[in-house]
Image (cartoon, rainbow, N blue to C red):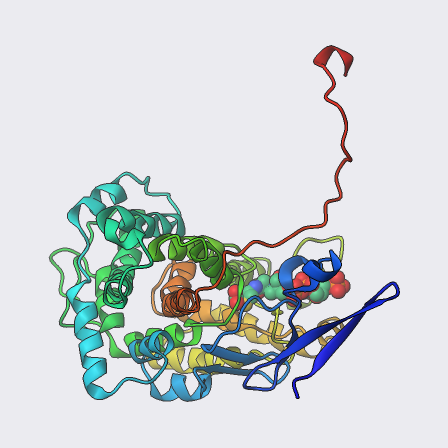
Length: 428
Ligand code: CMC
């Protein structure tokens, strides 16, 4: 028999169903609570609220488990590729050889963007942040593919929108960078794989040969796998909630990019490097900065530390720390901020403040160091995160549509003024 929870309000008791997930996670279904009691639940930041049942990503913050469609992040990072992981997230299963080849070919067929999009790009000043440029160009896709505005089209038509955004995001991302540095844009090279094509569009210069370094392409591919999905985080919830109004895929993804931008979410990867650089400039005294992070009168936080759901360790951080060592070693890069990062981590792991609050390095603590070694500039780091998170956003949007979920509309507890009459200006 299904379990039930009981809630007592005054003299009255109400039974609420308990929903159980495939990993034994339980949630009290409060969907009918307001109807029967007139009372809502209050949970700022949704720290304790499930917004959906999802079959895409499982994570257990206490045990440090992250799985996409049942496959562990460690297994996928070691053995898979980003494109294969994208397929897995979006369609639910690992692809056959034929399905994977078709998927890759489909993506390659759509990497070019309409020439008029270049005119939009040229309208941005060169100091425009690439995240703003990226989200604008993604929204602009709605104008070039107006049929995409209707998310209730046939599966094949929706799939074409999915392929298009997967194909065009690397082009947009590289072009946002080219706009920033004032260089002419490069067109996609469809002989190359997903990451190599992106790197060539980023770094190739006119009249110069550009060979993609496979070490760099592989490292990037792994970073994108680690960022590909993370269940109902801030940007993903944004994508789902925007999509729940039946806004288009492109509008929903663009909203997700903006949600990712902030320093408490995807923006943390660039904030980490800025922080490490500041510590280096300041003489490298990690103890001083640790004290600042603990001082409640100081707004400084140790960026790249702490996580909303991981309270023991972030499994992605473990993989990334090792990858940072490997990549810097293979590329022969010596980065003094890597030593500062390791020093900070060492101190934080044995510091009572951090231990008590279960604050550990998160995925972004070391990712910026790798991106830097790959030659990617700091304000492009969050764009890289968006590129990685794209398949997750698509999968979550598709699941929400296929489940025909209702429009997202939280309630509130009103704490403002009670009803009062209008007062004319001369009487105020
Ligand atoms: N440095 C110093 N103190 C911290 C930090 C930090 N990085 N993170 C949390 N705390 C303290 C916080 O001051 C609070 O202390 P107290 O209980 O004394 O008031 C306690 O730890 C709990 O903090 P919280 O903000 O309530 O925790 P949260 O789980 O709501 O926040 C977080 C999670 C990621 C927003 C936060 O840890 C943070 O701001 N970290 C730095 C930014 C960062 O690295 N973000 C990337 C997240 S991973 C990438 C992604 O998935 O987007």
